[in-house]
Length: 117
Image 1 (cartoon, one colour):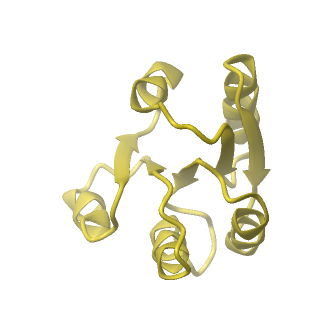
Image 2 (cartoon, helix red, strand yellow):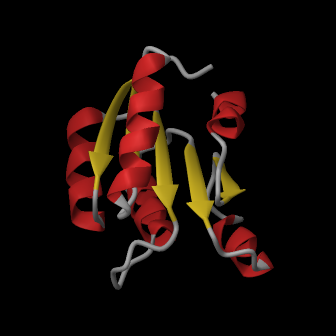
Image 3 (cartoon, one colour):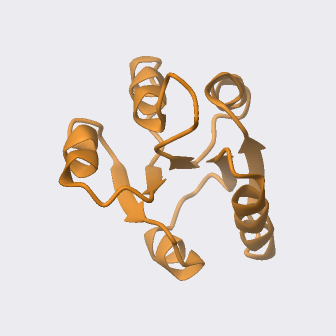
């Protein structure tokens, strides 16, 4: 169970982000949504979340994996749960060097995330 109740949801699909935020709120967590890489960097620095739920593909030049590496270089060590519709082994291999992370394949049931809390 994560100690810090602040969760950052980095997801460019607004409906998915809103559903996650609502479900976390019902479980007693404080969920904040970031819609892109820059927004996520700023909110991570501001909130210092206890968990980040992050889409791998953010419809930008940088991916969620790039963002995670940047956050790790800045000293943020909180767990990161990547979500992706990409079933390729490359995605798992791409995150192998990032400490304290997990990859879940979309569609992700909230119960899968709960198990990791």
